[in-house]
Length: 324
Image 1 (cartoon, rainbow, N blue to C red):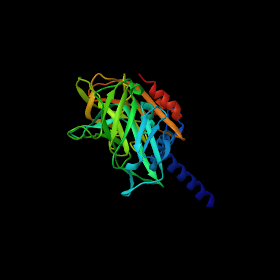
Image 2 (cartoon, helix red, strand yellow):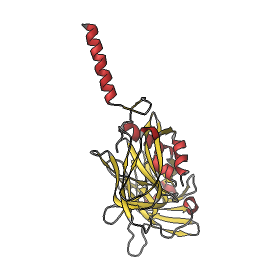
Image 3 (cartoon, helix red, strand yellow):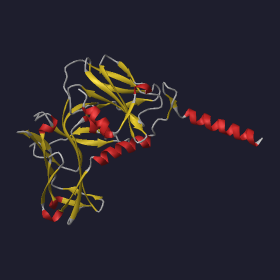
Image 4 (cartoon, one colour):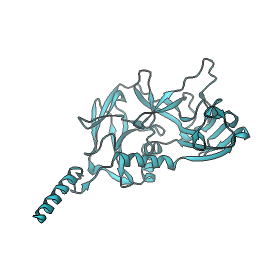
């Protein structure tokens, strides 16, 4: 009897295990990433791109230079902590994203919020995160800060660029809202001069030098099917528009009933040549698939498990940056 119970227990455990897995074309067990594993690999990518600086607030105006040559100008005398002027050492975290490979691995696509609340692709002159802290407490600035950004990092100066603020929702997804300037145009904003962007920022956090992608062709929605076991908690789907090096769209809605990701705003040009990217986590690395596509009206694009590959973060970044 004991042996019978042991056999039945083993069979039950095996059955439970198999129901939580999928199989690929070679009948190998596929265990999809958990939401926590997927979040962790993106957080790891962001941590790896975070630069840190330290300065003394008592020194007044501070000039810092990033790895890619961005000049950051901060007045230490303007910093406050819980409403009180700051003195002494200050820590600064800084992230700069100029290519779609890093935008993908950190989940920081360039999707701007339109006046009606829909989202559409932005072409970027750089995404930035700036945060000053002291003893682990986030600081505020009452006079803003400035940055000088080399425009050749994103293909040269574009006078149509404006400034955007990053808004992160409860799911950790980022979208961009236009930074409003005052009537005189003297507060937050950006302008191009020579081969530099000059940005004026009123607060810390995520910001972006961008403009909306422009294409006169009729627009459509698309749907994307991903391998079994994946949804919007443990995977993402992105669009890389051919010919645009500094912009990455994201399909930000998912229908659990159909198992389809959707660009439901109807903002994708019909006839657009692009690459659709499926991304998730696998054993501490990235699992991905990339598929070239020409957008048709209400098209459906499908990824299978057999089309996926596994790569390190560095390898995936190189692959994505190498797309047309």
